[in-house]
Image 1 (cartoon, rainbow, N blue to C red):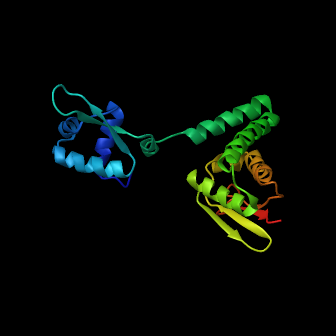
Image 2: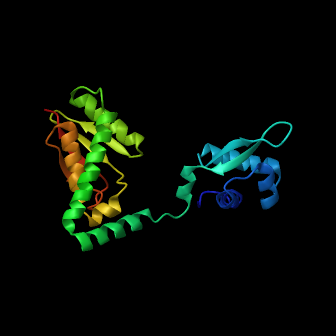
Image 3: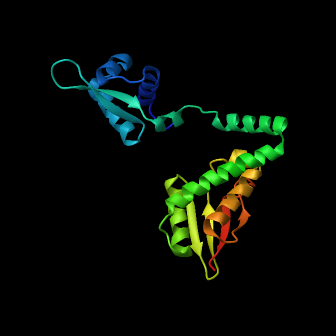
Length: 207
């Protein structure tokens, strides 16, 4: 939340604690004019952090209640990585490493189904690999795709589970298998973010 002004931070905190407030209510709470509140809310709305719903207030035009969006949750500390890591550690300790492998296998099967549905209708390897890049980008990944005469080089610069993959290499193993099954090719991987590289680099044969 460092990039937000102190006033916007104040607005965000009030909306978080209240679950939703009107412009007049925010104006009273943070001691600035309704016009000033409106300008800050507009800025937060453009960033996808705030939304609003209408609320009837008797006779006349409805008022609006401003609330934080799901995206705004990222402004507050989340311990999802720590929770997931500790959970996987407990499973490994109490149920063995085989269970960890099964968990990532289940994840691979779920993702494979999602990817196949997203790429339905794609024909040929070029169309499919291009579609894969676009789908990964829609999921929030930073992806680069290069081609030469023999292969495609798919670089993923962001790994959403890199902390987990660093400790549990099963995650990367099943990710590679996911691409092999999805593309029907002997995909190889040069390096990964989990190993300290800047990207996960997949080599996909063209033939």
